[in-house]
Image (cartoon, rainbow, N blue to C red; front, side):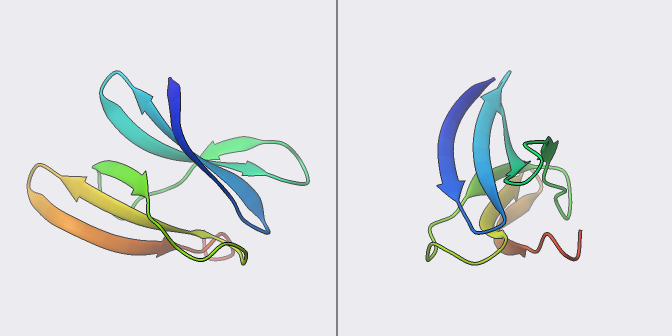
Length: 79
């Protein structure tokens, strides 16, 4: 996998990766250093979206072959 974008938020470091043509987002917890995939609302390609720095969570754009581009906010407390 290749890192394509990184966003530092208060709760974690969010890393966009490209792996075999699939864009994914991983969350690296600041306290534990553990990396885990960000769960998406449906299967598709996920991109870290521009947003204000700070706070918890990250803004995502998700697109799939059968769905239009949609904007979501990932809340680590709810996931």
